[in-house]
Length: 251
Image (cartoon, rainbow, N blue to C red; front, top):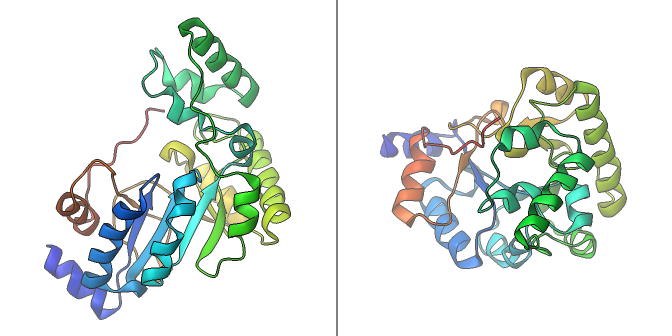
């Protein structure tokens, strides 16, 4: 199957959409290097969710291969300095779905109470700073995309709240970078047909977290996640078979 997909990519009708979170430069170099050799730069659609600081260190790798990338950010999280969903991992949170359904302030208050009860603090400064974003905005291989304001679950909140967060994010990214985002990524992979219609109505291309390959006309309808804890062979196998087992967070 991999060989068939590589042939179809080379023939010009398939693109491999890849989602990264926090790879090191060496991990990104390994994966991109292999894919560039297999299918070519023009058949890659690379994106990073959440805007972790490691993305800044990966710019030389994008330059090495001439690969463009979209960095999806949530301004509220950038200002706070940490990703709430990432911080939940490792904590005894009984109901992640309940947190997803809370508004931003209620969710952060609930997390703070949980951290306080355990005598812990969130992992801070894991995300790009505003100054990082301003500096990266002019890079020819980088664009910033909309990831909602507070990294909210779009499948669980009223549509007007989701739209408000997306609109706030559009304005903030424009202020920081001078560019209006054209792409949107669902936090936690919680996509929604209702939100998709609204997002497309706002002129944004929605990027989901579902396995598959795409064409130029269907960009955003699928993304295969690369995992930092897998070997190169395992990652390439997942990215090129179109049916990796995506670990979606519970709704």
